[in-house]
Image (cartoon, rainbow, N blue to C red; front, top):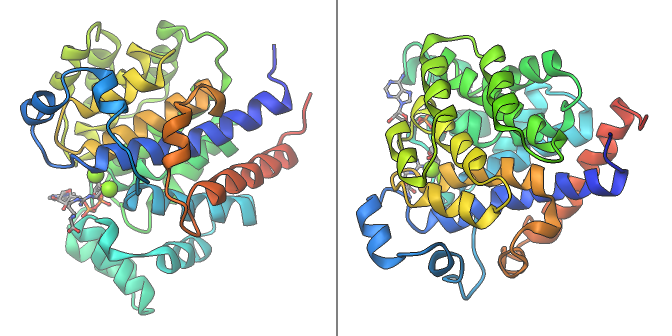
Length: 316
Ligand code: F2R
Ligand code: MG
Ligand code: MG
């Protein structure tokens, strides 16, 4: 049974707000150890209830906004428009990866950013920066998997040329699309779909392990680092472990420590695409920053992306 327009629009909103909340909540602990975080926040509710003031997102959401703006305006990834969006949204204090910073500064200054990317990490970056921003691709192309796969690749290319950086983005986009379709998540079908799309032995091994995760403690074996291979499967596994609870999905992956903003941004985007905005913690939705590209803008951007989706895929 297909979802009504209202339900689907709420899932688009849930995805972008879920990403921003995960990013902002996790951003308070980026690079901290699992033990340190657990000592301060022994339970899910202690972590979720912790913010008392506006929460501010990091580079993860800021770059996802650039992807969403490009897709909403043009209906597909056009590299020059994507780079313009990345450069005009760029605020270094949001905490970018060092390679990404060099590439974005080249974009801003009109230099050859592709050459900078190739030289900075020969063979390309395999950081999780392409995966952390790809969720809007998963939403817009949720009904066309081959287009989704190609568009996710194009969205990665300006900064991430390494196959593992690209495939991490493709898998995360697919997880968002699958989440946005599901009415009641069937874990086996979810992982079978991801494994069928998977191209590399490295991700296959990780996703098979992710499919076997049964407790939050198992998540740490999948990785918590800044590399896509060491974080994308972890975020997907956290969603699949507790699909009916955004709070648990995001908290469990923050409790893993390390790259907590990005783990929680990715897990939060998939969770929000499945649950929709109404099933996110409303107190945290209300605390998302009220800056010009804060909460209200994200909701409006999700609506614009949904309208573009309806143009590409009219309701049945
Ligand atoms: N970078 C951060 N946080 C660090 C703290 C920021 C601090 N507050 C500040 O302001 O300086 N967070 C963000 O970066 C991650 C996404 O990174 P992205 O966009 O993938 O960047 P990059 O530089 O391409 O890759 C990240 C690191 O991965 C390693 N790496 C990647 N490719 C490599 C290769 N071919 N060879 C060796 N190493 C490679 C490097 O350590 C890169 O620095 C997110 O966590 C986001 O939140
Ligand atoms: Mg970040
Ligand atoms: Mg991060």
